[in-house]
Every structure is written in C-alpha cells, then in structure tokens.
Length: 105
Image (cartoon, rainbow, N blue to C red; front, top):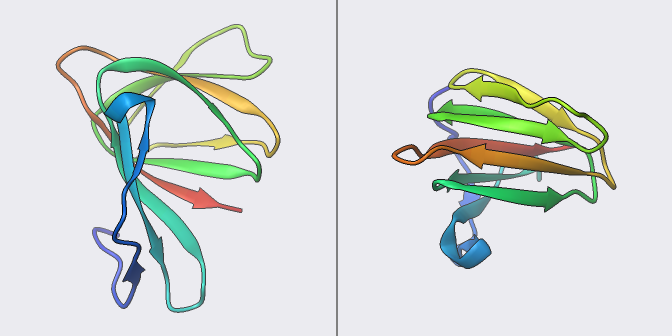
C-alpha cells in the first residue's frame, strides 16, 4: 500500500532525539492510530508501551531488540515486531534516512 486514504492527521509532529526522528500520527476511519515518520542518521533507543510493528517504506536500518545480542538489517518492504513494555535499538547509517510506518497493536 503506497498511501492511506480517508485519514485524519495530527498536525503537530512527534519530534524525538533532537529531531533525529520525526513522525506524524494518522488516524484511520476505524480509529486505528499509526505513525508515519523518518529517522535520520543516528543510533537511538526506543521504549514501547504496546506492541509495535515497524514497517520500512524507504531506506535501511539495523535493529537490535531488547535481550538480543545480534543486529538485524531491515529495508524497504520489510517489517519487525517489538513487544510491548520493551525496547529496541535502531541505527541508520550516515547518508541514509529510514522511512517507516509504526503500527500499534
């Protein structure tokens, strides 16, 4: 899916880590909330409250879930799941930008 139709968009951006991650919340007609954003070159750690599915829609990143010892690479068209009440590290290389949709479970 290249776009979401018939959505509401929260005008104020979600800005994290001094602007290294910026997203907007979209609300679908059925009330489902998602965030659509970009992570600029950096290494960041995110905490989750609810389970999340991170869908890559452009660029590449490396991810290490809490408790894992290895990094896994993800790119456009690939997704990874993050449990609720957990965390993950994400690294985006210099010269890159990782575009994503975060689906909340």
